[in-house]
Amino acid sequence: MKLSTIALNDAGLGMMPRAVSVPNYDRSKMRAGIVHIGVGNFHRAHLAWYVHRLMQQGQAMDWAIIGAGVCDADRVMRAKLLGQDCLTTLIELDPKGGRRAEIIGAMLDFLPVERGNKTLITTIAEARIKIVSLTITESGYYLDANSGGLDITHPHIIHDAENPTSPRTAFGAMVAALRLRRAQGLGAFTGLCCDNLERNGDVLRQAVVGLARLSDGELADWIEAHGAFPNSMVDCIVPATGVDEINLARKLGVEDRAPVIHENFRQWVMEDHFCAGRPDWDFVGAEFAGNVHDYETQKIRMLNGGHQILANLAEILNIRTIAEAITHPPIYQFFHKVQQQEIMPHIKPLPNMPVDDYLSLLESRFANKAIIDTARRVAYDGAARHIGFLLPSIRDGLAAGHSIEGLALVEAAWARMCQGTREDASIIEPNDPAWKTLTARAKAARHNPQTWLEMQQIYGDLAQNKIFAHAFATWLNSIYHEGTENTLRRYLG
Image 1 (cartoon, rainbow, N blue to C red):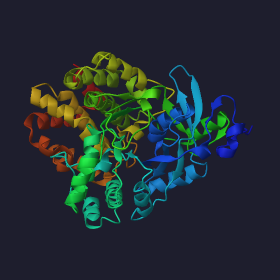
Image 2: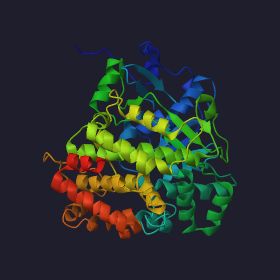
Image 3: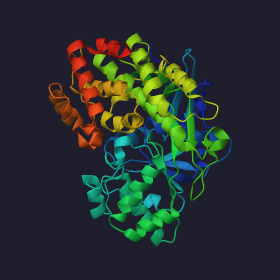
Image 4: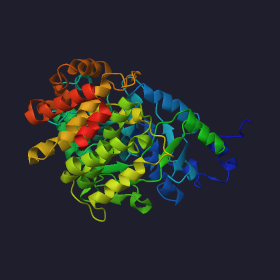
């Protein structure tokens, strides 16, 4: 029987089923205050939700969001969202089978995705825009693996430095807009990074200021003096959208081309450092704190790092979801031991949340079978994620003289995964922007493990560390000769 659904758009809001919450504010009265670059599922379940919640209370009507993108893939999302008046259905799923649906309406437009980014530049140069926020993934920040600074040798950065009025990157567009704002006598905006990076605001600052300095030192100084780049920690597990998610929205009575599924947990902690004002996000559950870095470190190394531990092993063993992976006994025992012995010793305890309690919370969140979060999604772009989520724990462990055996095994599992086949001989489809390079390295590393570590853009000086290199080689050889599960049992003793 065909389901009866209501098309998601402004005209259909009044006809939605009672079980679906809808905006209670007049969307025609919204005024833009934020441009967000990278309108994916996470942004809509997180920052956009916080703005929507304020609007539901009659606040923040001048903080509506204009979406934007600098990649070809953003055109697809733009077409979907403009076709439904930039509305999104959020569906929250809890581990006990409960679900809650709400339609959020804090986004009012999505800019054209253009070569040279002219419309994006002119829009964020307008006085009404006070915040430019980003979720462009970890690899989008062009980090140098050795220095941690901006990789000024990257072709996109070189292009933007040489062509400042027609940039390719989000940072180039921000610099061009800041140049226009300064010329017009306007103040700077706040750059708000919502990606999973330690000290993400500092990373964004170095990208924007560093790029500006390559072509205009005075502009770079002005941005440093007048701009703001608060550090923040963002957290909510949000799977990718596929046919199942679209069908779930239909079962709820909503015809949404891009619904978002998320867990029943959300957290946002940030520095209260905004140069042009901000919404009162703390009224709807966000936290402003001075020790954001401690929150970032805990979340990125334990949750995001833990995700990589699970996903890489799951892919090798052909386990589809994160929930299935963490309930697989050898994988769970390995995950738990590496967290306790090799990651948590370098985590500073936070108020009201002992590190052991945080680990228990993560394990229960990962085991939420209602969230169909695939190992493939979590493992995507491993090159950037291992750099940001796992290698810092390895460096800290080596510096402290602690064991890094388990983390070296994690890196070996990633190398085995990138070889491109699972242990049952099924194919792992390309899952990284540099997949061809990684696969070639992984195949060579089967016979010479050091080949994998010699990827300077990832491992930097870790390749020369004899303790790490020996442990990596030992575990990679074990995975190939003894199998993954036997190797995990060997590590577990």
